[in-house]
Each structure stands twice: as C-alpha cells, then as structure tokens.
Image (cartoon, rainbow, N blue to C red; front, side):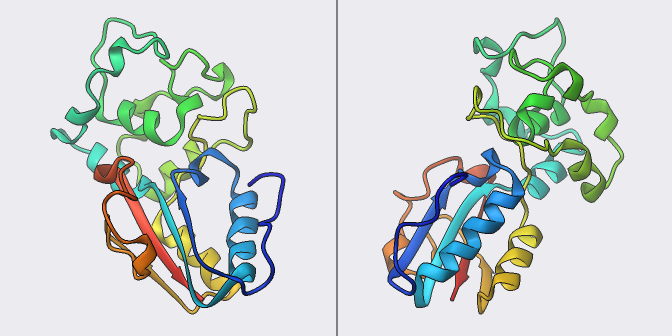
Length: 198
C-alpha cells in the first residue's frame, strides 16, 4: 500500500476490503489508496475499511470503566516492559492507537513517548494531534501510528468522489460479498467499519 497502486484497470472491481491496515501507515498513503480504490471500483462498487476506532477508544478511556478488561494479559507479553504500576485507561488507548508513544513498548521511540496522563482532560481532536506519528517504521510494521475516525475517512472519501460514505457494523456491509462476521473478526469490539460507495 505504501509502494504500489492497485493492479487493476479502471472501473473493474466490485469490492475492496481493507481490515486493520491503514492504522499502520501514514495518512498520505491512505489518501492515495482510497483514491486508487475509487479509480478501480465499478459504479456502485464498495470500499470497506475496518480500523481501530480512535474516537470511540478515546471516549472509553476518559473515565473509569471496565471496557479494557478484554485487553488484560498484555502485561505478560514480551513486547512490553512494565514498571510496578497498573495501566490506566489512557495507557490502553495509547497502546491501541499510537504504539511507539506507549512508553512500556520495548520498541517505543523514546523521543516520541507520551505520558498517558497528559491526555486526560483533553478533547479528542487535541489528543489525536498529540498521538499521531509522522512516519512508518519499516523495522516495526505492526505498530499503530495513525489514529482514524469516521470524520477523517469520510473527508477523504468525499474528496476523491465517493457518492456515499456510511458507518457500518460488524458483518453488516452494504455489499453482499463483504457481509458476515467471518470477515470482520479482528477486534470488532474496538473497530470502526466504514463503507464507501462509488
């Protein structure tokens, strides 16, 4: 996605599905991918994107609750080195949206680390500006570096020409070929699903 265009002719594809990919790369490449998807889709074709829902995760992390219980156990992962402290809600948020900023990540960028407490009390738009990382790290392609929300994806889709953009549900695409929970299995409890219709 960072190096190549889609290998299809204009107007030749009915559906495109990108699940939990775009959070790993810079916005400029996602913008190009959405534009290229528009090019290759047939009229009425659908681009479906599933991505961690940064706005939802931020909202869940702004007060004490039990949302992050499903993520318990990361403390035993070799990817993290924890001090003797319990993780906060915002620590979990950073882990899911801006991994190199998560100070407990063994591959964090020390100069990019962020104290999760500095996000408390901010609005989502302010927090999003603080957490996004400017560049992909080839040695750590699994890192989440770009937070996404429905507004961001809608703006790109509308700019490149998609006629309709809708917030979808797990298993609930407007395209029959992309319906079913067997497709939307990657963390549906924290994911945003967006269908872009040409």
